[in-house]
Length: 162
Image 1 (spheres, rainbow, N blue to C red):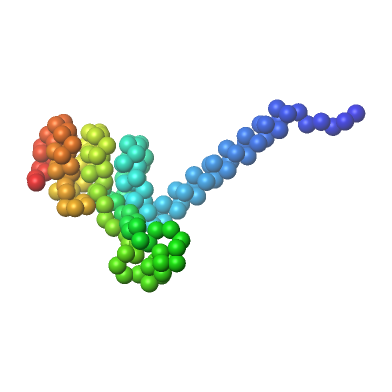
Image 2: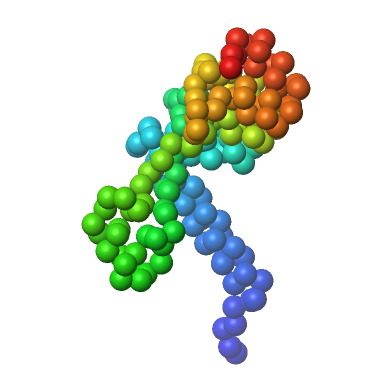
């Protein structure tokens, strides 16, 4: 008589391990985000860009700043790749080296996504509709450029100006 493990039991065991690892990964991510407000703020801006209303609500409830400006890595063409010149530019710094730049505000990301609910949520949490993002644009100028009448009316009612 052989002791055989049923294939269904093996699959169930693997499934339970995978679910447990995913739960652990989620808990670790939440702890990582909670320790540093700037990481939470940047995660909130990414969630705004993705249109994830529930996650943005959660980040705002946890204290994320609705006036956060999205930060991104600007890497000029001459510093990209692994050529000796590109590596030297990265090490040396100065002109042509990668640097962190300010991008759009969270409100501008909501406007870019044509998401009136997200705009309303951010305004309700105190987002500054006149705060400039990249190139000095505001949420209102972004909405006008994209011809979004509902969002334009919403921003003007809230007191936005050019």
